Image 1 (cartoon, rainbow, N blue to C red):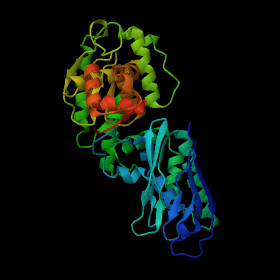
Image 2 (image 1 turned 60 degrees about the vertical axis):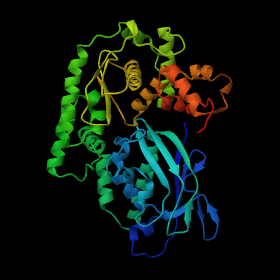
Image 3 (image 1 turned 45 degrees about the horizontal axis):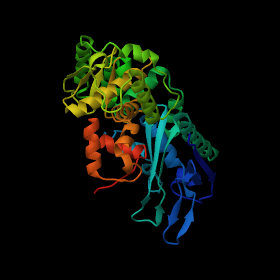
Image 4 (image 1 turned 180 degrees about the horizontal axis):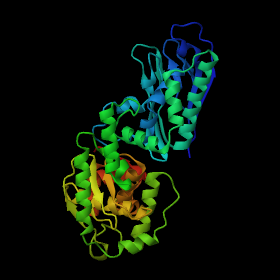
Length: 424
């Protein structure tokens, strides 16, 4: 898996009114695999450097302030409106405080982290960051590197008799948090709130929502809820569970689930692709559209959830699902996502399908795409066009044959490198 490293050497910045920034001035290098996130060009001199001279205190302050959000707040997949302030909590460029830092978006995938660096140039400064890269990195490694930076900054400040700062106190609280405190901070962060900056009434509302959700649904529900309508979402999920428990399904899914070998791959899309191929093989399904009928039936009911972030509720005992009103093709995709979620579970428990970009949600999307529109089937349908330029008419034809959306076909072609998509 790709490595993530933060390297720095202290430099003498001389006297300054901003003492915490001046004493933590450093030559900073952030490496994502072989790519330098801090690589930049000084447009006034055309000089190129891999490292950036900048103070580390603003970065440490930003990391500490957003520690729980970086761990427990999830991005949306595709379109949608993120929570207010999401970008500021997840992009290193907002650590600025008047200084320039690279764009590095940090998005939690549970045990993994998506790191994405994009190019940008400052409007009123000569610095330009030209590089772009995106990788998935182990969360432990990312947390280790940022923790090491924060510790080094606090040690550096102590050398200059700067101690007992708000950042130091908050960092001590983070490092010493007991499980109950971590749970509260996780709930707050999932709701887009700062657990260190809540009034008593808001804190009580967070605790009430946390205790109102059962464990298997808690993280997803909190990430989809808000304080004003959270109770409505709880009621919808409880009512949905009762409806799904009374719903009959195909008899073969439980037995098939016991025969699944969950791959060791950590990347969610790789896991989804492999599980989909296993399930299709175990069902004995021929190439082409899969039919959710007979022993392989997956029943679904419609009941609009109180938030657009929730797509479906999946039963604890089967892949049966309660979905928002969708077209037949979109419902098939949700049924396939529910199946992927069901076969990958370690135990029987209800779950949610959402618009979030968590590890599990991304796995179910990859599973559904490969299960309903296997890359091998698409290659066969493309025939001589496989590996060449593929236009909209071809995408439309293949989507009709496999009974999935054109969006799914385009993603499969792109993700599996089956050809080059064109607009004409």
